[in-house]
Length: 129
Image 1 (tube, one colour):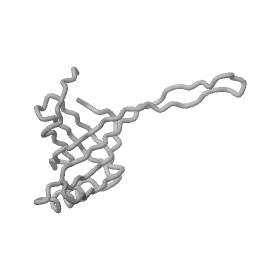
Image 2: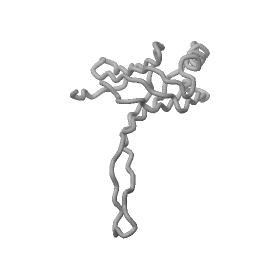
Image 3: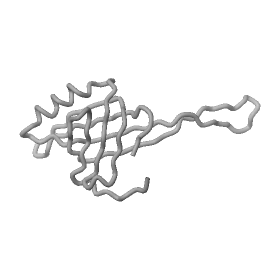
């Protein structure tokens, strides 16, 4: 799939059919490696293994519906449960979907600023586009 640059403005993240407005989001892809050196090797040797995908997202929580958004998130995305997700950028030029596990969720409250909900999710399988 060719990548179309996205502004991020009005991007949405859907978690189990509940829509959230995205403030910022990042994808991380890593590959596990294992050392396979013998004691007589002068330098360490490695082989690659499985890939791991991780998503970190900061979701906007507006004051007029903060309770509903946070309560809704807690009901559909409890920590450690498998959930479906879909990210759409503002123009739907880039869409990513799949299944993942919420590892961490933090409700951030700052005086004079909008509340946010920050989540960290490990992807189960591939990040499809």
